[in-house]
Image (tube, rainbow, N blue to C red; front, side):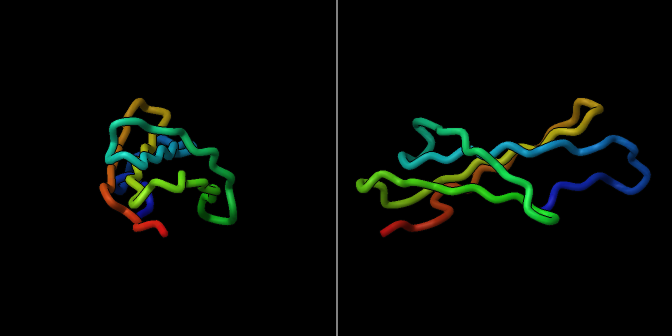
Length: 78
């Protein structure tokens, strides 16, 4: 998924934020993001007891607009 504006919008989208939960959203941990080319990268360290990861990403622009998406059970873990 890529954050973007509607045609004609002039606001600038800033650095997104990413949070991860290993307990279906009861607690969240903020992830450090690093810019790589036209995307972002992070490293995750799941606890051994985790079965799934839930992700929440938020993007904001300099006009005060924001969008947030949560993907529950985004990835199974072994």
